[in-house]
View 1 (cartoon, rainbow, N blue to C red):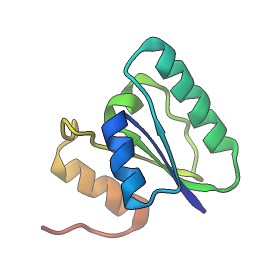
View 2: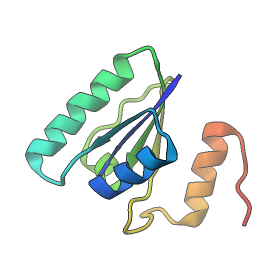
View 3: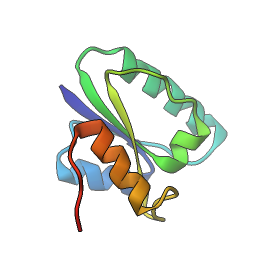
View 4: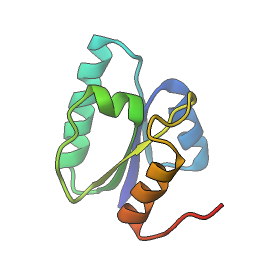
Length: 102
């Protein structure tokens, strides 16, 4: 199963360097949000994507589908998390069953 990343240019570059299978970058504009929605829909419908990482900022601007597979996780961008550290730990714990410690 592949990992796909949807984010701004800097976040996408970081995940690409980290070895994510498919990385897509978008600007913060209405036209780009439509492209992001289309790409998200495409990734969800494909059978080879197991995890989709999307920046919190973009996740708030598009409607995330309610699906079990692929797992869709919101990640912070370069400006930091909108949820806070504890909320991120809980998201990871629920998604992959691992508790993150400091």
